[in-house]
Structures are given as C-alpha cells and as structure tokens.
Length: 186
Image (tube, rainbow, N blue to C red):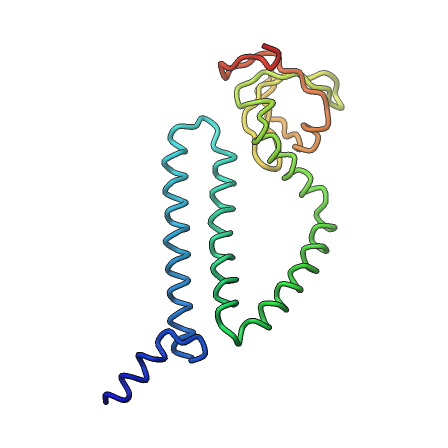
C-alpha cells in the first residue's frame, strides 16, 4: 500500500507519467480559466465607465483566447511527448493562417480598419459626419462602430452600414462633436 502511495505521489506531477500529464493538464486548464475569468471581470468593471465598449469587448475576448492558447503552448512544451506534436501544429497553423489571410482579405481589412477606428478614435458614437457615397453627399450620425462596420443613422432614420476599410480610406468630415472633446486643431 505504501509503495503504491509513493508511486502515485511520485507520478502525480511527473510530465513523463500518464497520471502526471493529466494532473498537469488539469492545473493548466484551471489556471487559464481563473486568469480568463479575471480578465472578463476586469473588463466588466471598466465597461461601466465607458460610453463605447467596442474596443474593450474585442480586447477582452482576444485576451481570454490568448490566455488559453498560451496555457496550451506551455503545456505542450512541458510534456515531452507533445513537443513534436506542438511543433507540427504550429507549422500547420502557419500554413492555414496564410491561406485564411488570402481568402479573407476584405474581411480582415475591415477588422484592421475597425481596430484603427477604435484605437485612434477619429470619430465617436454620436458624432455627426459628412461623407461621399454612391448616392451623393451624406450627413449622418454615428450610431455604432464595430470591428467590421460603422453604422450611421441618416436624416430619414435609416441605418447605413459602411465597411470600416472605406471609413478609413475616405475623407470624413466631422460636422459636430457630441462627445464633448476638443477638436484636433485646438
């Protein structure tokens, strides 16, 4: 009995033993879950003080996924039997990301432009803006800025969805600033 107990205790955190692999995996999963939960709770606390939570929602989700990915990478590095699998997985992910990037160029350009809109904040929710559209000059109010599209509300109360790549590549005139911030030239 004592020999069995000693063997179990020795194998409990041994990355070469099956019991150790499972126990270490559970610990990494628990640690990642705790950190992801803390990130989610911190984002909820900060969210209470913001009027536009688009960037915060994106950053929070990205950080939570990043925590789990880092935990998986560290776990695969710690377990000798998974090192070769981790290397092959990383190489495969590289090829898939290139193919995915080529296939989703326009979508990715909208997301990158959306990230720029959220980060640099040239316009904010509530601003009245003017821009050229296929139908002519448009004056509208910014209703929402997401990572893919900016939603505008025109004078007829119609929603207009503008891809963020277009919002970043065209000249937009801010007619009024309902955010209470000084103009960039001041």
